[in-house]
Length: 613
Image 1: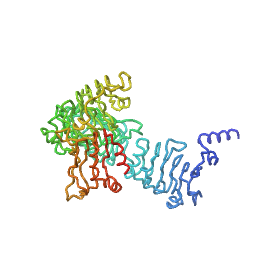
Image 2: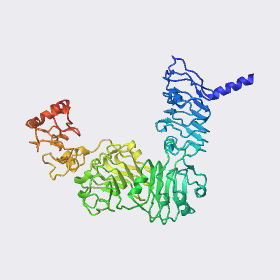
Image 3: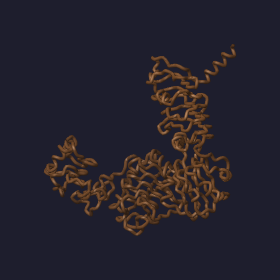
Image 4: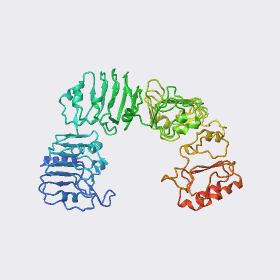
């Protein structure tokens, strides 16, 4: 009897929890939680009588040839979406588990699995929407269900259980697991394998004919791809693959796409997108990478890239790709897309998002056309800022990443800029991918903080020295040198934040009616977007402004109003012509699409009145 009591105590203890609710006054009690495990089996002719208000259950165990209908199960589980101790469905006659709508599932008591679906002879579909199971954790086990076809459900299962899953023995599993050497595995791989789990390794021992035959139906790889030391001229035998993916946050291991040391490789010839893997392409002397290749290879999460490649633009290159000349000169000329290598900068079409080459900003930088960098997101190459009169880099408000594409080139090199006070004013810059260290030095007015230095780190720590601040090392003073350059010079040159920039005038001291050429002016009058009550230009007021050019009293909407300088009292009469707009129509129309700006103006009381109205 004593031994039996010890065993009972041990079993209860290993269960790790007790059945039943805590005291209602304990602070842990939840009126919407059912505090008992739910057992549903073949001996039941009715489901447990529990309150339909419950949303949280403990463990759920379903087994046997049930006499209950799917409708009864759906009603029973209608509001329950949290399962604290897992779900197990085994040896049932169910055809679908769609009555289960989990939002959170933790692991079962006696296993690492949170969901187990085992040996259900009639099961044809799982039916659980794993896309909405935001907190389905741990492992899923789906085995030995002879009628279960998972092809349509694999995406949701894999997205939720990227690496922690065990699936086999069903009518159609979620792909095939690569075991051992890939070349040997390929000889016995079933033609029905549409997804591969593990690392696809192609080398000098790989057979091109066998690859072409066996890989024709493969559309996904959940793992890595390694192509090394081959004599192939292209990888077209992988053209059916749409996605090479691994969940970097959940995976038990990390994987790469490595294409290295293939002496005859001319083109990739594949369309696969990469998500969540490292990327290395180098030492392929004849290989030419296209912009389409890069769009695919940087489709999803990029952990890092190690590239030493040659880029080739072609007739299919998208218009958002632009190419720098070898000099990197962005000053007066020789910048354009691949079809316009000799075009002047002013002929560069708007909308360049990706630039290839080495971009240089120096004392000859073409400020008047700097707005054409506004949409730039990624530099495949490098960015150098040197000996410039720049105070900030507001002409690059959308820049997200710099990726090196050749060895021995510093990806970000900022040096000898005496007026520079700020780099990348927002946190849009997400990182730099390179084997070289970013270098920022000899910028006497530039403070660099620890956070900034951490996210520009590449595979090497950034070199930061002789700036106003050097990533928290305390080596310099916090007091910047006074800058006597008039503010309006920056406005003319296009250096301030995008919405403050004015381009296109040769007279920086003019009337103040300079307009931004990329978003100014009306739509055609026959366009559905044209509004005769809208003034399609920014308004600039300064001490020299005595009239409003082209103003019609019928206007009820403007773009942006800029007020600068010390205005004379009689200049405020100008506001009278659109007083109705300011004080009445503001409730029905957008007054300032981009905001009201008042700078260096002693008449701030008037500004407050305008805003309040």
